[in-house]
Length: 365
Ligand code: NAD
Ligand code: DAU
Image (cartoon, rainbow, N blue to C red):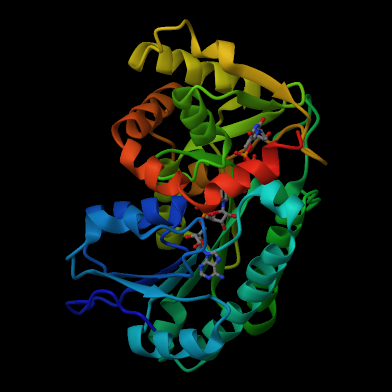
């Protein structure tokens, strides 16, 4: 077990964040430490998507410690729980990219299904022997996705907590399976769980395999902007810090056994998103050769591509008083500026195996 920094708890019992070196997890850990004193332990396997540089802002901060490991490694997680004695676990750890799940589904089964199962069992063992008060207040928050509900037609109502599960990709099927396991561990064993199902996130530290950072990176590098199919697929975009504030609200006040749908009420077609990125870059960093829009290139579609996702977030808004702070326009502008100001982060990430991924995913399109 690698403990990079020694944890100082000052009497607070910590939270354990799994997958906290990835995109949303790192934003969550950074926002958490910026807003409160409750210490955090991050557990992350550091796959291609995990990056310790994302947490560099916490170097030397004794409220945070990092452990390198796999959620499915019972021999590591069991003593970690005994030592840290977390009051809550927020489970971000997953394989998260749909295109990778299509080209190689096995890692998705291993981490998202088997890993979640093993984590649930290890957590159940820990939780069962907690003192009554700690047992009652403990929470296992599982971070999931709107993709578990499948695809919407253009005139259908947005997904909500009652929508039937209908996952279409290996990624979404593996996340759906993990949601079912988490729900069952509550129903059968009483483990105090909450589940969040969120729409598409964007913002700082997102790996440039996902639509928005990939388009920013390609635009600035003078490469084609590969739009799948007709580009009219719709996603509901949420700035990452708004997702993090929603998770904090659910952790604090969410009802045990409940699910919370989270979204930005911000449906956009992919083509509109790509054009908005080009327009923002045209203002912030003009290419000198005309608009970045000229780099847009239509490429063959993603197999099984879901046409539309949208979320009705009325439950979390009405019961927990959560609402997003950023509009798509303000969030996208912040994101574009972040990538412009942090080109060293992208340069570091795109070195090495990322280039192999671009070859695998785009050369045959
Ligand atoms: P990401 O791919 O950027 O990060 C995943 C992190 O998990 C990485 O740091 C990786 O090293 C770590 N990890 C992977 N396997 C692990 C394992 N076996 N043990 C420990 N750590 C492991 O993903 P993200 O976009 O930050 O997504 C985080 C979570 O949020 C995922 O569960 C995803 O399904 C969910 N989610 C993502 C979005 C989105 O738009 N990105 C939207 C809704 C829900
Ligand atoms: O809805 C939540 C989900 O959003 C999360 O659960 C996933 O972890 C996250 O990856 C994201 O999934 P998507 O498949 O929607 O995101 P992605 O960024 O891969 O693609 C967004 C849309 O853009 C999708 O319709 C495919 C399209 N696309 C994507 C890429 C990478 C392109 O047209 N071209 C591309 O090069």
